[in-house]
Image 1: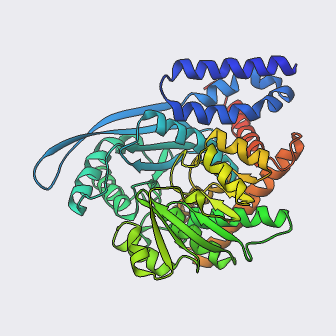
Image 2: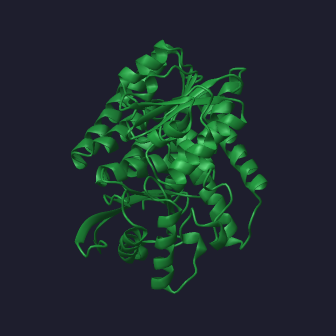
Image 3: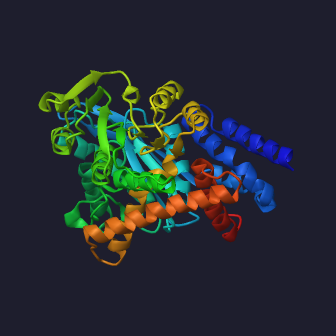
Length: 449
């Protein structure tokens, strides 16, 4: 049976490659999940018979559209918009919008595929989707960003709804962009449908902790991993790549839990601050001024800026890659291992390459995949949807407690599933199998649709 199952997995992967040519990130995400599923197929023949994996690998709907807009000088630009509604077996499609020049259909499909299992792991009633555009908000005025968002939503609105598809933010889409997108949705539909988009401002339907959620959630997950090994953040040196939303609030929560974050980065390079990153300065530079990370080093005497290079050269106990996909490769993983790193917790979506994950395994480094460790953002989005549906507003403390409970629950579920399927401590297998089983059972219950 084992050989047959392996052959089936390879056939399914071959079909994915053939049907989705050139979409390398999507291929990587599917491969990573499929590698964990042979043990499931060996126990569940019905998944073979009903071609459950093939159905889950094929998005329910993919929308690609033109986004024309005009800049402040009157020049016309044409961008491309995407929304991949991947799977609605557990609830309305849920997943962020990413505005970045690298966005193409392969990136959006990889993110949407990951989102399906991530959302399942939260235990919340949400399906998986993802979207975005190759528009770059960097260096654009507020008026230009507004015009782009309005044009983008003028097409996308027809595919959304609080019971259909609920987007949120991602790279390049923060509170400013969510505001413009929601305003245009409201204008076109003539409905104040709060639950149609999450990550909203606190004064108009947003939820406390949503801004902090992904970073806080990754830190909570890391704490649960350490507790399982009889340890804590106390005295730990931590590096966090990136300096966007996930990184900033990951740093905040790590400091609150007793760790010291000694380095963070952006696309221009990284800063190292042995005293621990000063969060007030970092927030001023990145959230208020939207400046380069080098500005931090100019204002903090204990910090130094390293142009280019790799943040993973900085020795640490815990590494939290929180910038973008495939940022941490096999060579960087080997450096981390040599320098004594013992935990890697993915704050971004698939930031570690397959080679890096292999190095972590061989070095005995405890590794938490993004679909488990960075689920805090979407979990809190689902809590925002709950509050919108009931016209309610929860306190910061209540929402944060719910977030911590969800993240610890995900860790427990991944650990228990890994043990049940013969790979104790393998959180990658645990996350993939637990997420897949939840989605697969719902897919079967709904029939061949």
